[in-house]
Image (cartoon, rainbow, N blue to C red; front, side, top):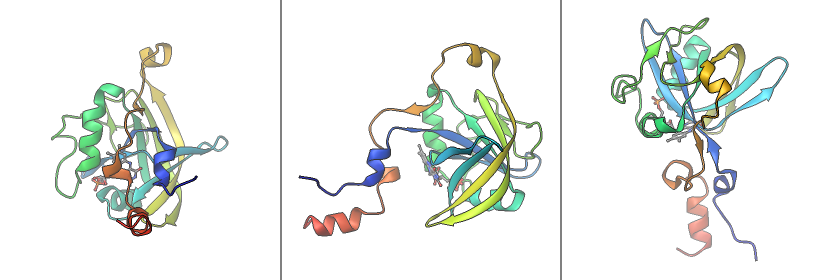
Amino acid sequence: MKIDVEYLQFMWPMRHFLVTCGDINRKSNIIAVSFCMPVSKEPPLIACAVGKGAYSCALIEEAKEFVVNVPLRELEPKIYYCGYHSGHEVDKFKEPGLTPKPARKVKAPIIEECVAHMECKVIQKIETGDKNLFIGEVIEAYADEKIVKGKAKTAFAEGNFPWKVYSIRFKKEREERNGK
Ligand SMILES: Cc1cc2nc3c(=O)[nH]c(=O)nc-3n(C[C@H](O)[C@H](O)[C@H](O)COP(=O)(O)O)c2cc1C
């Protein structure tokens, strides 16, 4: 027997990234993003889905740039901080203790504590339900030499499915169908 499920549970585990946006000299922000993946090798394109109400969404729409920063697992508490708080209310560099550094080509900062950085220029925006899908062309990509040569594990989430973050869409229908 097959039963109805929260579909995202079966797309787990996911990679976690910290996407930076805005302008290092004015206002910049960090958002935890897991809906992020490569969508072309040539040209090199990354698709990143950002909630329409997120502070980051407005910043990316304005600057048409973002950076995908790759955190190590030890940054997990800070990733969750950035995923549970909004730049509308807090400074997500200052509060969790993450350091902004100038990027090579875009105005958004990179996060020093992350080990790899993909600087992207937005070439397309697609509205996808509650998110805007930003397609970014990777114009710079660089990483800590010791990470490239070593075996450090990046923030690949293998643990329990985070129901609080991901389970929303079909919850009501499922509960009604299951008579809860
Ligand atoms: C592990 C994790 C992954 C997340 N992935 C995404 C994502 O892919 N897209 C998204 O819009 N929000 C995602 N979120 C939620 C945002 O990070 C969250 O809404 C954040 O508060 C938005 O911040 P902002 O308003 O400063 O932009 C994720 C949260 C966590 C904890």
